[in-house]
Amino acid sequence: MANGLALIIEDSQTQAQIIGRMLADEDWTYVLAKTLEDAERVILQQHPTLLFVDVFLGEENTLPHLGRLRDLALEATVAVMTAGDRSEAIEETLNMARKAKVDYILRKPFSRNQLRAIVQSAEQDQAEGKHRYHALVIDDSATAGKVTGQMLTDNGYRVSIVKSMEEALEDVDIAHVDLVLSDIFMPGMGGLAGIKIIKSTWPKVKILAMSGGLNTRITPERATSAAVKAGADAEISKPFKPAELVHLTLEMMARPTTAYQERQA
Image 1 (cartoon, helix red, strand yellow):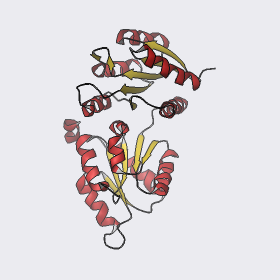
Image 2 (cartoon, rainbow, N blue to C red; image 1 turned 90 degrees about the vertical axis):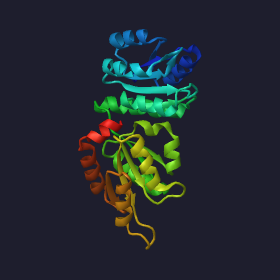
Image 3 (cartoon, rainbow, N blue to C red; image 1 turned 30 degrees about the vertical axis):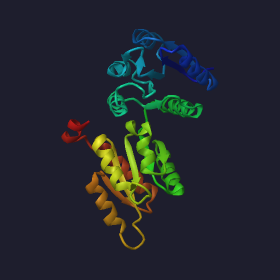
């Protein structure tokens, strides 16, 4: 028995077949649609639980129509695919996709492992009957990142982990996260500068600053206070217990969006 039904909205027969073969290897069935009209008909008749939507169908930009697709397929996981080679800035594409509540953004060409991660997450969402919050952990310590990520996974979050702020900002994945947990002291750009960029670009994203201080020169408290001034919504000092992290993140995600964030989003 198939794990689910996916709808591939793609005008390139070759690209659609490649994605279809990947899905078949994951024991998913799939339907192809070359136009938005065909896609809407499939959604209404067959109720797919996973959508792959190309940004451009011929010369038509699908981004303005994502809201309608989401409304027609409220329970589906939605992944937008983009080659990033049109005249529109990729930042505009990411922000429009986020406003449409897209779950994933894939830059073409993407790998089998990237698709498998989406499929597995969609299966878990179906099993739990809800869309999970997506948390991004940014920490140059592989051990700290893994431990923090596991705490969040154990409490129902979908988690991505990167080792630097540069890696986070280069990944299109950042455009649709709900929560960012960032260490402050990291090689390269570091947490403070990155937090400013994330908050100014995606003001609705909640940011939790983490720090163990910098040797004995800067205390964790001073470091995280600086991060809050940079735009973080909350702060936590390392090391922290799972209960502390979970309680704080739950409180953060429950906070209403401010009028300022609504204007900036």
